[in-house]
Length: 406
Image (cartoon, rainbow, N blue to C red; front, side):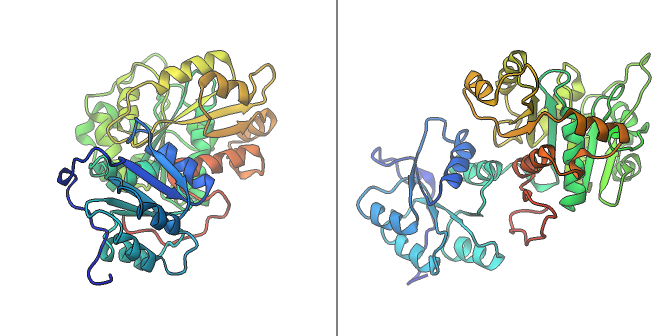
């Protein structure tokens, strides 16, 4: 653009001046600012600066200051954003790494911003923390996104203590992604003896999961296709109901092989994973792209949630675990404010206490998310956090950006 001027950066080693900020962002709205802070915490643990404004604000400010090493610019609402970005390139030092936030979703615009102007990445609103971490965070730390991002997406749902409601949330999240989101989804119940994920949706369990874990050499794509029991045209369930007198095993590497094959077949794999010392639980929590922790509003749950949040992240995880406060308002429980003050953090998703709604749905083997309630709203919010899904139903089909396979 404009005589060949672009925003293309040179290698990060090209400069070492100490007067340059490591990161600066100009963001036009408070919601995007909050998500940006959450998504970049791991990439920039020492902190960073975000200013309220857009590309015009950035033009004025950056003309009078040293260029930061990494820069995020908001172009929302501009009728001629490419011209303004070209003007911006004249006041920036050539090695700056520029990332763009906007509202347009078409592929042609993405290509103009990244290929013609040379910005390193573009994300459209509404921003999602995990997407910010995966794409902007990877650019800032000069790391390519994990190869795990190339297949379908695995999400593990784990209760910080027994009875927190993780299985109910996992089953309803999987149903929502498949039926409302129209994504090919698998629900995996990692509790082979007393798991209830299949029962909650009125589905059948089978012997395939145990075979896959004990004899991984037999597992291929055809095996996964047959072992995952269909429930509708886009939802499949893999669960077991093994005898209590037996102890199902898990061979080394079995969970990794099964997860990889399932991610080839499905857009999303939602795994109900009880926390424990079993090899299967440990492997799935390490392999997943996103952990979800479910807690109740009690002091014991607060303690164990903090302990689980402190666990090391897996190599495929770009952000911390999503924290779900379940049964908010339950008799005798802490308030949401008390939970957040005790944990010194904000919970990501809140689901109200609705025992009658959930009890009736579970006894009927029907997804509770079908009914209009606070539970349904909570599942929609969780879907947005972990799968970038809209929060209204039915989901509208939108064109995907080229960096996303699914």
